[in-house]
Length: 298
Image 1 (cartoon, rainbow, N blue to C red):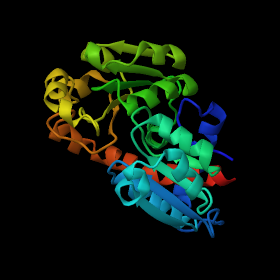
Image 2 (image 1 turned 120 degrees about the vertical axis):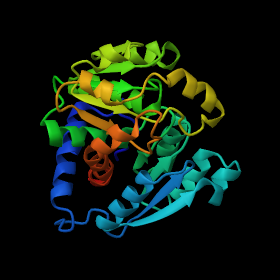
Image 3 (image 1 turned 90 degrees about the vertical axis):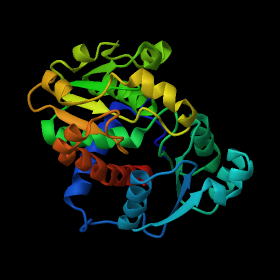
Image 4 (image 1 turned 90 degrees about the horizontal axis):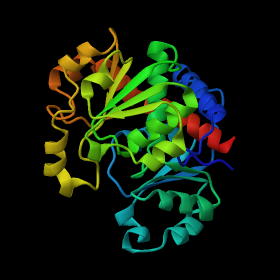
């Protein structure tokens, strides 16, 4: 049985297998030779709101022959305090797989342990593995390979997406530069655990200079709304705009995992100039996640 719980726990061979399969899924959409989820029901357990993750998984499960069942935390007993391990043991007897989007990483890992069914992390406060696989797929489509490239992550460098990028850097052999104020830089223990070539700096210009990819995420992640004013003030100088783009390598990709708050982490002009890449990135969530689903039941 396979779970996708984090980029940290995913080995390089499986990452490469998933990326290759995602490219095939994209190329063969609408004419898949097999339906690996035929006759299966997969539960989507979401404690956090979602557009791209929910839609891409529901569509992906259906296209692979399965039936998605969406379960908001407020609609099931989990939202009223039932232990994760009890919910897991119930669902494990009724459905064939689960996609869990929640706050604590330990909840996803506990669910996988007790449910006895393939479990996919659809976002936690610590990691967002599905997003990074879709992002790498997008970069490989446009730049052929990530190996030897430079990705500059600008903004909140201690968020879940940045964490997953850190683990991906060591596995796939690219340089990751994180430009963030000191208080929004990654935990040193996480950096040591991950290894790889990761540079953290408060100097946005040095991070962006010569980069192949400029990447950003929202400054106020879900669950951090009480910190909005403080975060916006601290991160105000870490916006991707035309000045920053000019520092990067000519033809550099500008990426955003969405939703975007224009005028904050990216300005409107730069967003629209790079909309094709950003929305390809969003579309690739579908193809990457279909590859994950197929891999999980193989």
